[in-house]
Length: 460
Image (cartoon, rainbow, N blue to C red; front, side, top):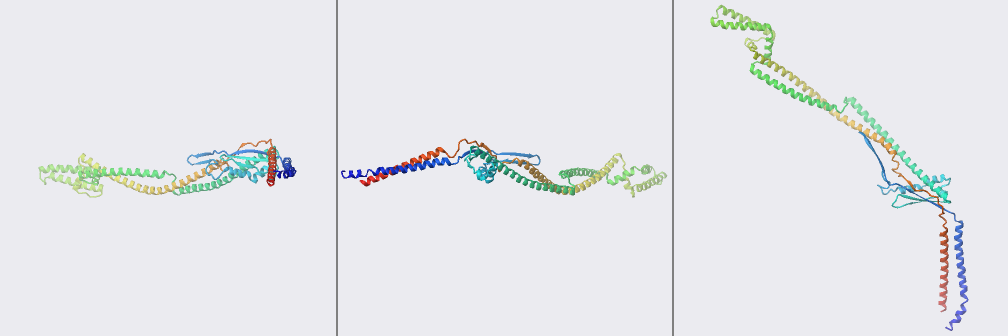
């Protein structure tokens, strides 16, 4: 211990000198720090920051137009945040706002260049439809004017893009209208030419003709049934009267002739008298001979008159068959003639109906084919009309659909007038200088203490 004391004492004057060097360095470092901080506050430009926010409403809109008997037009604007998740309208609007076109338009409003105007900082808030904008200016009023100019330029650019889209869409609609009108005119012309060529004018013609054919078929069935009844009645009368229908007609022809009736009367009287006379006298009796001669004259007169009336000779046997005789037989013969006439009339009517049916069936077959073609042409015309009308409606409805590609955007927070500059931050600068000064001083002190400890260790 006695040997170390003189050494320590001899080296004491060196500590104040080392402490002094550290003190000078500390003062110099602190002076530089504070001089730099105060100089920055002196020369740094004052910057004001203006903030505002835009919001994109998420609700969609839609409209539906029904055209009775023609078609319908539907127009809808879905939510910009639904459907395709890979497309974010906020990112689109951010890109538009950051574009040189929008910045140049905003700068032009303030008579600045795009470089002088600067760029705005845009932040998309997650899980919302909000875009936050920040822009700086040399004064609070300038920052606010830049914000307003940029907001207006963005709105004008979006509106310009919407109008450009509408113009392009309307041009497409016009081309579609021209094509639709062309197809409509072609369909109308084809239908008119076909109607003129075939004479078919209504889709009900085939139905009307089919109804007529059915009515003729029913009428033909009724006529055939009536003819069969008349034929059966005729056959029954022929069996009962033992004469044919033609013979019955001949009998009525003879029964209405006065000469024939007179001759028949003379013949019957002579025959009656002859029967009486023969029962009393022989054939050579004068009265018998007289009545025989009278009967022969009447018979010859009957034959001559029958030949005159009927155009053919009828012997005595057949002549007796043509005699109507009683009123009952005459009535039956009249029924036979009537049945014969009815049968012939109904046969002719049936033949006429058959001819009409054959004719109308051919017409119906042709008309059915024509009807199918007509309906096809009418459907083509209806489709062309529906497409044309729907396209016309889409133009007017589509003009209201201005938010399909560029959704509605609204100012959520208006650009305010900043009253306090955002840079430089005097408190932050002074606090930074103080922290730097404190850290520098503490570092020098620690370095001095470390050196001192190291020297003391070396002495020991």
